[in-house]
Amino acid sequence: MNFTKLTFKNRFKPALSKIICFSVAMLLLTSWALAEPYPVQARLDELVRVDAPYPAPPAKEPQLESGRSVAEASTRVYIVRQGDTLGAIARRYGFSEEKLAQSNHLRDSNHIFEGQALMIPGTVLQYRVSGGETLSAIAHKFGVNSIELARMNGLTDPDHLREGQQLSIPAGQGGGSLQVSRALPLDQLIWPVQGWISSHYGMRDGAMHEGIDIAADQGQPVRAVKDGRVVFAGPRGTYGETVIIDHGNGLRTLYAHNYRLLVSEGQRVLAGQSIARVGSTGRSTGPHLHLEVLLNGVPFDPLLCLQRTYA
Image (cartoon, rainbow, N blue to C red; front, top):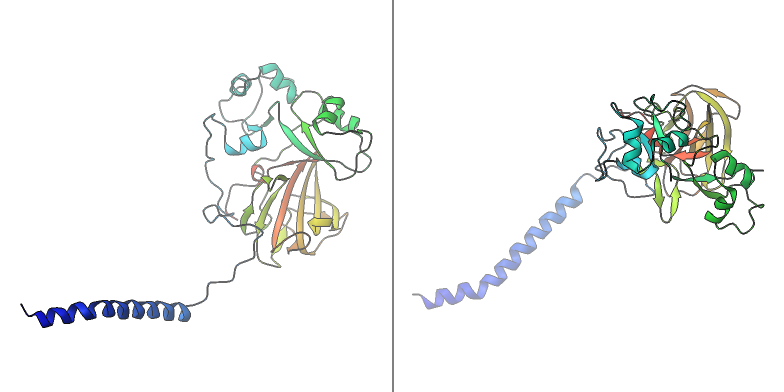
């Protein structure tokens, strides 16, 4: 064995490895510097879920162990499927058929239809107080006890409510004037803007997020989801430049954080008509549309109502 040759290899092997590693690193750095920059995207107020793009909602909702879909579990609204009976739905949630019928103002419990929305007893809704409303009037509207409503919301003086105050309402108690069953437009509203859902309906940072956020490019058209009449158009606090459209039968939609408004109060609009331009006004960290769907002043998940089709 040539001892001199072996010693030479052992001495220079570490140095050779360092030279190779350095060369590879320089090659990668040069490739990165010369590469095309990543396309500029709309800034988002939250991390976008790349696996759940806005234009392609899931064809089939994931199921929980109880058999309820994620949407049903979060909103406590059950969407009637083909073959359902009121008795079977009531047993699924642990209620009597009579109580479920009473909670939804059903005169004939034998006639429910596919796609009908049923409010589940025990549901807690978030309600925003309007100017001049009293606790007793709100309690009557939802068919609940005013004393219980005051206790549930920690109101020391129930005679003094402020406009915009949030109240938790134990809905689905029976009585009252709130009717969900036939007024909620399930899978009927067109999409207002093309983009990505950056924040879903539900609890966010310890507070209720009453709509969905769709991240989109600055200035992109915002369209009315349904025919209606504009009842508000202008700045609205943390919502920024906002449009509210009344569609009749207690249904309203709200479009917030716009850059510019294209309609005015009292104007009639058609589904698909441009009503604003996407912006980042109000409390926002990037251009996006905040969309709310309200029935009798109560917010519902817009994904229950938007068409399940590509934009």
